[in-house]
Image 1 (cartoon, rainbow, N blue to C red):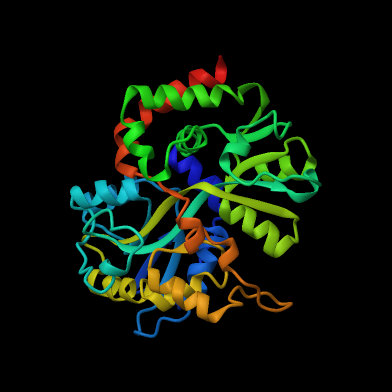
Image 2: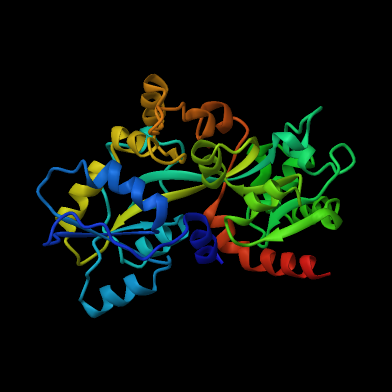
Length: 353
């Protein structure tokens, strides 16, 4: 499920950016605009002498584990999800990292001893402003209120983020969501709230689909990846509006593979996790840096996002902007690792009933 989410989110492509003919480091990420932003912010600015080849993958630990167990490690630095970071570190697949330089500057603590920070991406509700010429939806309660705001809603085909948003819409504070989700009554409550929109939903699985649904008018509101919404606004001029309330933030990290070019990998990761480098990535894509000081750099440097027609303010499009964080839910990868299979099985039954 998580692989499918990431593939849809980043729009995987099978190309590689190459720093020079001889690669001292192989950097592995998800492809598309996301990897292109890493190329510009981290790789093109790296001056330690190591040449860097970039490859794309579909997520998971299978290939990494195979390389480590065979003693033939060809990947050095990999962009991973939190559950991969936790499991891979516990299984000895990744190198432990000195986190003293950034640990007190992170929006949330790192999920394992083997990671350096990258970005937050988010599930966010949005709509086309033209669909609501009068009163406009402002929060997640409005997304679930089909009487106040009639029309179809676009939602994804898995439970992650939907459970959290349903509970906030039902009155649970964002900070208490996982406490409530850890009880059978809490999950029942989330599904009861989902029942209120069940007859008004259109399901999507591809990351581009919710934008198409909203643009065509098939739905009046949808949940989508914030990066997709931001790209549509910033690069395509779409008349979309975010509903940042109860946006659910997911984390992204870098790790060094045990048995690879560990010294060079760790040096590169130290560069790629500086406050400036993380801020620089936001010049090319609207994801949120995991370091607080990176947000400060962006705030002082606005307009930050680079366009041929002139730079644009990026903070209004970022899921880690201070005003967004106050109302956000930060996804708990441990909770989903422990409970995700059961909850998604119930969600699948709910969809089909």
